[in-house]
Length: 104
Image (cartoon, rainbow, N blue to C red; front, side, top):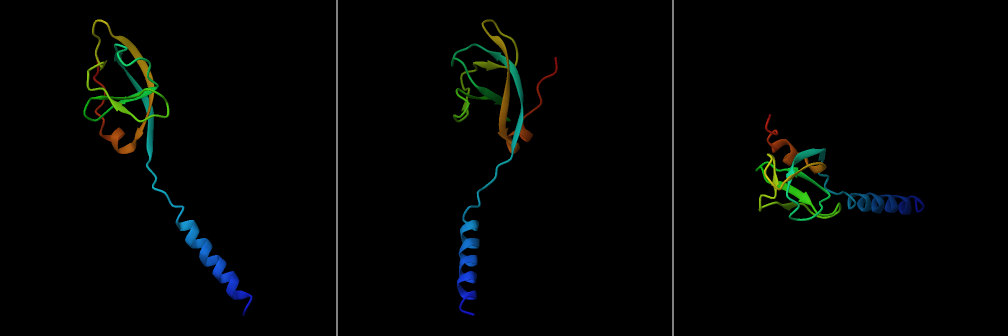
């Protein structure tokens, strides 16, 4: 019986320790984004069109997304803008709320 107590104690501590490792999981959607860009912010790593129609972009791969509030990313062509095609990673709820791109 004395040998069983330490085994039960270690098993209990292990289960408590493993439950502390639980993290919140956010599912992501992967895709592509197309549009036109005037190079105002310089090079960017990736981006996507948000549900509100604002382009969310990352300057560098591991940085947070920034919202383009200055209309430097567009879905339609304008003078001084160049086409881009980039890949995107975004939370599933944002991906589901994003409107479809306009059809030409």
